[in-house]
Length: 279
Image (cartoon, rainbow, N blue to C red; front, side, top):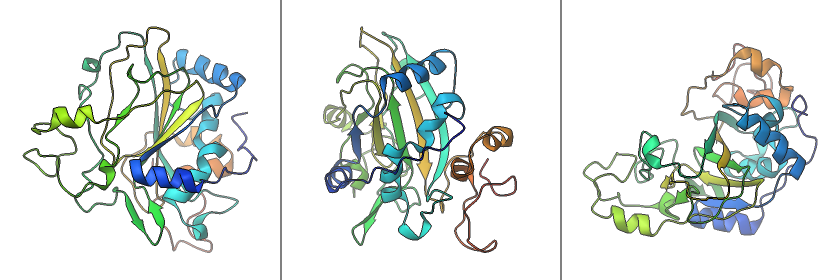
């Protein structure tokens, strides 16, 4: 399973999904994975898998349910090919939060944050031009257990990815809402979600978002967080060995190629290699 790139056609982003992604900065795709896939992937996470680069979890990197969306919000038609993806993977981690898990276990204590404030010009921010979305650094969260609203899901300050004014704190470049006199009001306005196991949430990292205490008594949170970006921009230095990437099918390997678009020979930047990577 993990050694083959799925041959299923990417699921095209619908006009409705595009509208709400632009409006809110995030969308939820419910019940994407089968029961068998969920159980197989949960077993790997609970056994200690820290990223989704190997095993059954590897198929989440280029699952057809997200490829069509990422093509729409991170790429352009001339850069989408049969032998490579029009976007890159920047990182992956898993999380298991048992009932009672608290945000004090995180370094940021659950402080709402962004990759970079969208009010400032930067390569990671959300943009729209010519009816085309460019979402900047983009996060894809696979929920492998049931999630109930108000009990620990990732929360979002919907619409903040297009904010034109800073968050009220003393430093307009600060990528969080700390020391803002409006922090309580912003937290009150934040949205979250409910979803069955096997669902996926996609959001731009220009959106103010936060971790929350896991208070769902019925099950832990078991989630996979994968991060993506344009082939022209990079935020994370990926800590992934060449030996692991080499075991992937060639098209999946292209998720980890270098950050450039033209030059370097015929066809441009389409293949990963030891000399063309972001690791």
